[in-house]
Length: 89
Image (cartoon, rainbow, N blue to C red; front, side):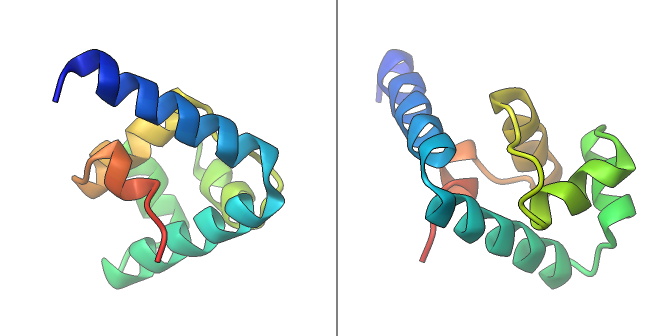
């Protein structure tokens, strides 16, 4: 797949993410689930991803909406693609 198409799909996913509280809630649950499956505390995940230790909790509590940069850092920390991070069951 061409890089432009991949970037475009990420942008669309992010716009949907920002606009919908349902998506925000689903992402918060997925983040917490992925973190717990790997046996990580919020602080450990934050250190692994290079983000502030309190930020993970704020995302999980839906107090903050992560930027594309933070989403990529989370994906990198989990060693998954951004697409996988933003795919919900």
